[in-house]
Length: 461
Image (spheres, one colour):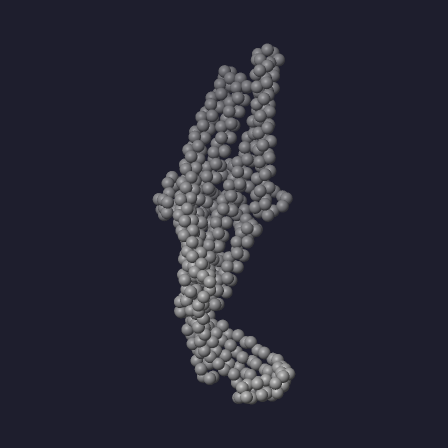
């Protein structure tokens, strides 16, 4: 019997699926996380303050920390399922005392009442023979679920960094617009004073005075809106960085670099890099495995088991040869009738598979639409940016002409103020369109799944 048990143990520990040997299901996620940061792309903006803020964001953000924990949880779930593919060896001992108070009969033999001790110390081994590959499929299903979680983490990185950078550049824009607004108010106050002087000597009507005062009030109101927006953006970025009071560092608008060579068109294959697309692909595989598992649940299962140990009624006899315990065998299990539960489970999985296919097709259409929308926004913003530059150049020329006229006495101080005011208005448009163009490139980066846009020229168009 002992030889049979040893043979069973050898079979159990050697008949393990080849694909399951020497696999470490808990993989190192550090390298993937570094790729998600994609600092190479953000360095194209040539803003060290932004890059440093992103490093802080990746370290401090609680959403990112939770995604990391979620991945670790699912890695353990894969490891737990993988353990079901391996043999199980455990000890299940028993120490007790039997009390029999009445006569017991075994046929014609009678045993009077008695009491005795019982010492059992068996070592038990078992292994479910994965003939149909059911346990392997369960592990594969959980691995695909792990891939879904990893892509969700990647999506969080892309979305969080893109939203943060957009808010960062909006703050830079607001800072510069507020500076220009203060200049405009100062100029308009001078204009109001000079118009009042003209009115006092009868060179203009009251309507002109009221018109300029109304414009001054509008400029002050706009300044208040800029100040409110700046405060909101500062608080938002502080929340991103988990920082309290203190100076919030950011670059000045004059240091902002506009990205060149952003592609005007992109091949639709770019959506294959998006996290949601990869999640849907992994989900189809996962549900496909679940359908196969549901089919195999209808088949019989076989467990090889073996047990060896000691079984004695006296502790002093525990280590005698006669107390040795050994058994081995194979246990087949098959549900003859389960009320249709397994068939219903199979149909549920098939419905889920069809649903996964539908979601996959839906994701393709939505992803293409989002990329096209983002690309159109980039092209529109670039045109507006170029028009703003042209307008700014024209306003600079007009301002220079007015200055020259003022030197020769053909233009008044009031004309200089009006020209300067018009020049600042054009600069406000340039500032807005510059930042809008930058933010549109960030949106395109987000829509393409966090790909360095400069690589699109060679890979996807």
